[in-house]
Image (cartoon, rainbow, N blue to C red; front, side, top):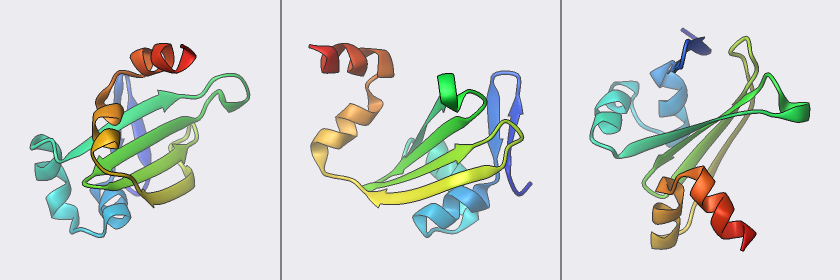
Length: 104
């Protein structure tokens, strides 16, 4: 698999794509996910972004973000170093709660 696949409510992605973003071996991706050391977030595009998905992966202080079209092709990719302790808690907060907090 060289792209992202969507099956019902599940997303399948080649471990090599995630591994490349974090500069780790592909064989480490699944164990790190099971241990909670790599976490992820999937968002469906709305309005002008309809049909696209944003997949975000976190590992340590790094974030890998992929924008994927409905066919599973990666159309945008970014890797960033993120801040310390405050970001760790924020990224695990459900998006609906984050939006409520940001609206205040």
